[in-house]
Length: 151
Image (tube, rainbow, N blue to C red; front, side, top):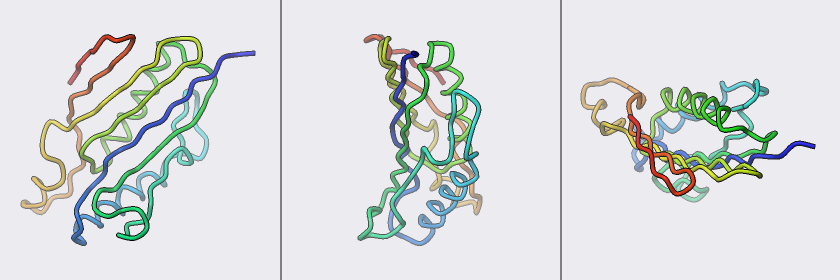
């Protein structure tokens, strides 16, 4: 029998109430829908992600909260980096303001990753008529009480 790892978190997607932000929220969900139904280990698949509809009364007042989670065969420390790389490939396609992921192995210390864009996402580019996803960020990794920042 092998150990298990639980992965979960959220992406704070495009926000506010105007239709232009709803446009970004819809684009985010289209990108999520393009993820594979099944993926190679350590997987990052479409059904791991979900978000409430873009409606005031159905769970998206302003901010789009894309939540995700799943369990998989236990990730070793080197495989955590592979999963993070896959997650960051997804982030590069989305419109967002922050993201948090928890990786909780059954037999090792837990990881917490936090991503914050280097530049104001979405709004800074809207003035110039461009739809640009966030491609640069600062990442904080907390493992065993140690904080490691990367860019």
